[in-house]
Amino acid sequence: MRIWAGMALAALASFMAVNTAEADTSPPTLQGAQQLVIAHIGGRYQAGTSLSRTSAGAAIITVTATYQWPGAYFEGAFKGDEVTVRLKDGVNILKIFIDGNLHDTLNKPGEIIKTYKGLGEGQHIIRIERATEDQSATSTFEGFFAPAGPMLAIKPRARQIEFIGDSYTVGYGNTSPKPSCTRDEVWATTDTTQAFGPLTAKHYDADYQINAISGRGVVRNYGGFIADTLPQAYPYVLFDKQTKYDDPDWKPQIIVVGLGTNDFTTPLHDGEKWKTRDDLHKDYEATYVKFVQELRANNPHAWFILMATDQVDGEIQSEVNKVIAALQAAGESRIAFLPMNGLSFGGCDHHPTVADDKKVSDELIAFIDQHPNLWQGQ
Image (cartoon, rainbow, N blue to C red; front, side):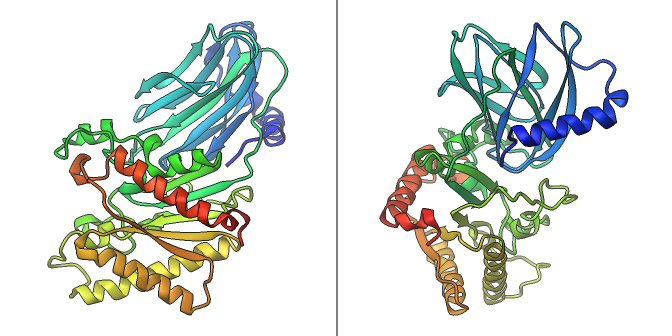
């Protein structure tokens, strides 16, 4: 998803024309002469506006991005020796990269304005990547700022790839050295930046979305707990389900889906709506088919790759293959299955490790390389 110059300037003009008189009378102060750096935003977000002032009193209106789905990232190109970041995020670990190198790590930074200096003259690229997952709170990116100079923009990427799934797609506890973790340890060792989705996307220099929620399934969540399933949450920008997601610039050529682990890895218990495993299978298959068909309606040229591990004695893979067969029988032709076998599951709560993520990414890259037409939607 992108905020480009036209969108940013249009929002700025609208905000200043209508809301300047109502703006915050004591906005955060940016030191020195600063200007807004045009941001390129990856992932779903809800756009808003914020007001900042330079130390000289000049007003700068920013188009902000409130995010909640995992894997969000923010990029900006600028010239000069320093760059300032403004954001509100009290729940995540954020990695700051400058010119491709990890420059800083922010741990639940809260509401901050932070300046990075001594970068050297010339053009630079700053990128923020969200590493952790939090299902209860939203956070907001409020802009990059740099000393006055020519306006620069990140060149749009030709390739887009979307990953839909559960904790395996999130990278839940993937950096943990042990499988037994406290809740805090799960949070601290989850690193979506090292999950198989971002690894694969970066290999192809593709923009990506990580539309995944730990613990959620197609029709049944882990252990049968009550919350939106992934298909129920998927249509919305945020988990509050107030705003439907709609971005005409997001047209992924490849959509990778990995769902079923939470539907099947725990036994059914009294009080659930499925009386037998066969009932669960039928509901899963029908709902998954419908979900992919809805994805197809919104992405007429995309290729679908459905993935599953060999857990539960192959039950998940068997069910996913039944889904693919049903879709193909209904006329779907641009779809394939890719197994996720041979994983160590040494991360928190027996989840994939970063080595497992690398293995999955390597296998996904090999499959895509064998079918280069996937990027052309053919």
